[in-house]
Image (cartoon, rainbow, N blue to C red; front, side, top):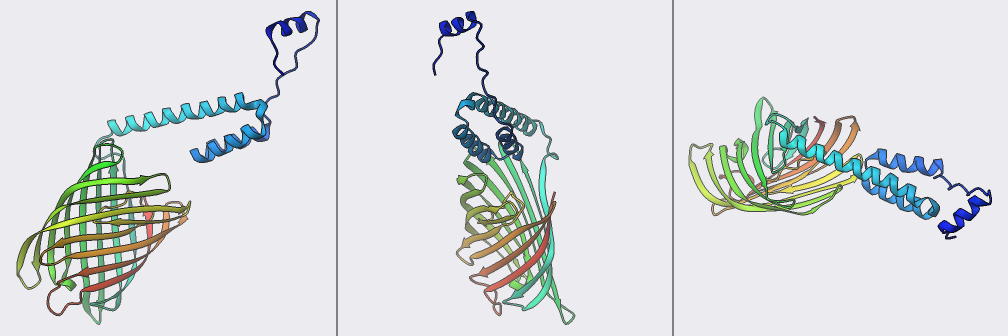
Length: 316
């Protein structure tokens, strides 16, 4: 019922009291507070929408709570941006360490040990990714796999979606016939989708490779690199992701990676699919499957190797 100022004055003159405006019920308020404490904006908006529908007389108070939440979120975002701007090179790094075992097929069929590390520094206009991995196995007193790779990739962000990348990579895989292979690449990347639970990005550019074969021969060639990065948070404790073309995920909870480097002499394809499940705190279990394919390996080598890994991952 609409009440004018004259009506209010007449009620007051007659000595009548004005009915008090009902306060927001405590259970509803507690529900909104709990959503805010969760830190999930989608949950907050959903709870607020339900609260307004079920408590139409308390919309003003609910809006006030939402306004306070938005104000605090804006302050937190501003503080985070300022921290990134002021941080030194050795600050604000995130990463993960991985240790486990694997089973191989292809050039060898055996069990071995696997370890890796990832580091990511995400600044306002640039991002730096570093990744290294080693796989080692022995059979009947002989080393049957001694594989090592290390990659560093700086990114420069033009905006929220478009970025430029540079990439430098070292590989050693005597099983595939080379003692060292160096790859340098640069190009553009674009994030097609980016939400709290889903990310899809692509990148491509020219590349240059130098390969030192185990036989002592060395060769260099121009190549092309194509990349895809897909991350999907299935649940709070379960994540699947996919990266291609050497785009390493900053998220350290699981990944699938596929690397495609193509030149006229030999094309290299690598795909790794992994699923991470949180165990406790920063510790996760990872199950992954890797396919490594060389279109023109040295004589006597199989073109395709596979690795099935089970490992523990620690985020830091």
